[in-house]
Length: 119
Image 1 (cartoon, one colour):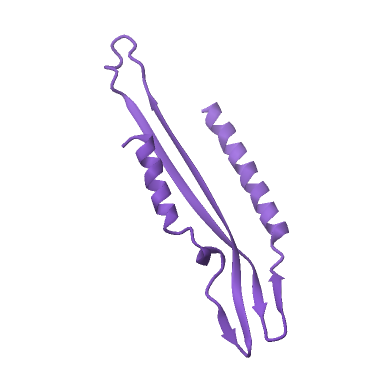
Image 2 (image 1 turned 180 degrees about the horizontal axis):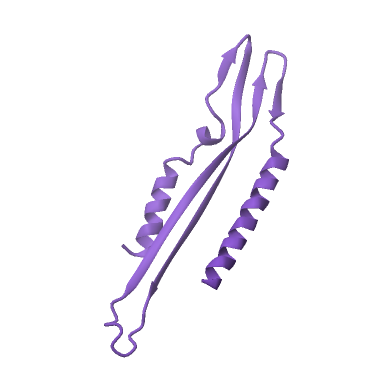
């Protein structure tokens, strides 16, 4: 399977989950209020391929490699509250936690990258 095929496969699978209900959940009606959950959605993808050139008797020139992957993160961030009198957005206040999580993930990735280079 070539890199383009891998990327196409990932894109097709992502399209099935990339719709408005991923961000805005099903409304819940109770006590004269409608509450609509709101989420932040992030997608990430990567892919690569390689081949080894023929050098001496090591390779017959047919070595290849490839791979790809992707992921999705959905984080609840608040709700929209709708009443007969008003509509308002209520945030869960997760920005500081999200920032800390991203920074921690970046640091772990950096450290793992350094360890791999040493090996």
